[in-house]
Length: 308
View: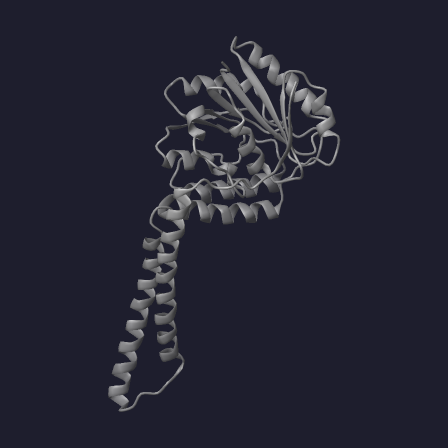
């Protein structure tokens, strides 16, 4: 029986994987528990895979190409055997010495414990966008979590039963689990400057993350009732069209004539689009029921799995 599974996605981290493996192993050895270390090579273009093959007592999941961090984490979570799961980045910015503290927090009755990099060692630009994004996410998702982007987290194994990751959703795992009723905690963790390799952070990831945020908000609030969301939008347009029609009717009585102008055409358009939104709601209901009634396909392809 495995007690702890450590999941580490890596992409072009050839100089970091051996160092990280050594540090993680040293920390886990002090816990006197059975553990496994799972590396997911997310289609690296350097010698990351070759460096991983030099390591001992690891499981390596090797992707055919780069599918993204969420896909890599999803593959790792589906390969775990441990009762406790720890995820972390492969760039040495997360510190393995924080793993025991995350696990200790789980023992207090939490199901998910997220790392909080209160003192980040990143560029000023990256810190600014991260702080802005975190505040926006807290407001939209109604959660007190300070740091959504920290990959260093600890979970109980049952968190990932019937759980799939898509897009850039890995940063939203805690709130998604909280919506399912799992208890969420947070621990301040260390953060180090990147020493080897290049950061994968950019404006594109920020934009994609915002789109995923909107999706997560919709999924968390309306995943089982899309008709309520689209129906509300439809009826709001109906309401606005009624106001326009009343205004046009009163205007026609006063001037004794109805003219077809832009405002009247807008009212007609709102009736049409409102009806379309309600139809979208019905179609969404059908699709969501289909989704919940069958197993979803994976968004990635695993080339091979190596256990050493």
